[in-house]
Length: 355
Image (cartoon, rainbow, N blue to C red; front, side, top):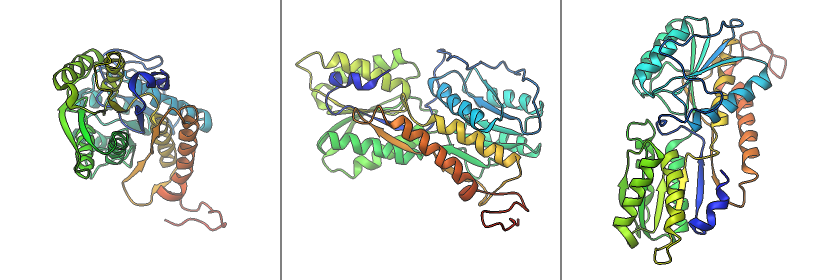
């Protein structure tokens, strides 16, 4: 979907914050191409060797499909095959059962979106005890964690940036409709808290209402329409922090702005078309490959911020190349900032690395 074509319907202030991160909890259905749904005990193809990596997605979702483009990019650049499978429900019980079944197949590294901040660590600990490496992507598990890395967005930073952009477009005054997606997703509260913190720093801006818990686009359309009808001219801007509400808000505002009696609303949506899920898939697998090859973390567990970008009609045709360029730069930093080479490996000066 080319969102810049929708901008005239949304008003001049319509923007997208492309958050390199995490989905809000994926909705049922809508299976994406090449995103196989895993049964309770997924049947894995035989690993090709000790460096085989397994990637696990919670369930079919646009974010999951886009993460897989990064996995494919890593496979092409590295020549390392990655087994890919997804679950059917975004629950920790299903994820743990599926991944534990995969762990018996000989995979040495796992890239996993944690279904639950605390519960995922039980799974990660079990994999670590079996001598298998774990890199979380998309959302950060509770720390301390057995995972070596998390590759995701700095959630408060991205959501705060979205709120600042909306407030700027509103002229630093007015009321906001705050639209959340899943109240159970690991990142929703972080986003909500960040938005509230930004608003608190602008005396002439306030949140008029917060609506949440909309896992499907049809449900989101109904709730957003109801909120706008009830609030009328009390709202000046809308912020959405989930995929389904963002797409729903686009559809609602297209119709809203057809009525000349309606106030034209400023809008910003995050977690939509672009993001940097490419980096989530690419960097998680790249880190696992290095760990399997004997590289060791420099500072124990580390969070790798895959970045976030504001996308407007001015840069919509160029930002995707910037996202991939940024991802490749971070992949190089894995070897200099985040990991140490195996003992005895010569560095750039020709000196052997010592552990």
